[in-house]
Image (cartoon, rainbow, N blue to C red; front, side, top):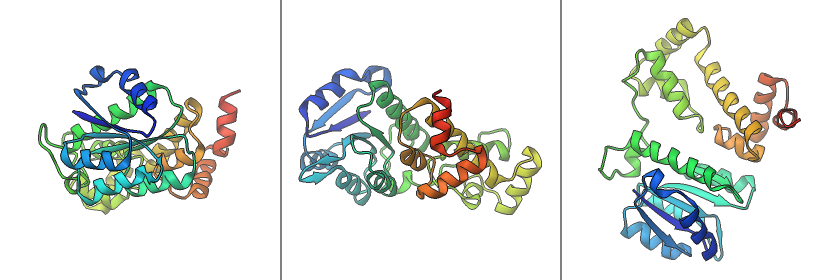
Length: 252
């Protein structure tokens, strides 16, 4: 597995090279670049599995690299590391298919966890040892190994909490009719499928609110909500508190 680190600050690149336990993660090759043109050249010349990238690198922007990955159907998962908490940056990263967005400064353990998730995503969506174009990797994974269709649906939901997933999408992934899946899910769990999706997203949001300092707007994106106001409404409906009130209560 190969990682490309991109940052216009050499000390940041060196810190990530030395501070992250690459061997534990199973990464055997580290490439580095200090600007967008240099990184773009490496992305097109080398097989890069994970891109660890800064956002602001004047006169360019890290989002340009993510656009390149999409346009040329490159296999790299992109993890952004940025000191910018602006919602528009994260929203654009999500729109373009970025894998994760970490606010700096962040402990190396948080970066390692994001890389581990990206590696797991590669393992689940790509055949072992075979390069696969993004258009194939973007196809929804099929879940056929679980003990029941409902278990397969739950697996799929938990693997895709960072996106706005629908009943039809889940049904297609496990080869069932959407109406039949809804009836079966409600019968076996006692909960409507759409309500279960929302509950899982809220539980993940609660964990991030209580255990991390990630801004609420980014937590909304990480749970598949591109509309921050709507996320806050849904969260309050399920918990009785706004996301900020919930975080403050858990920090007391």
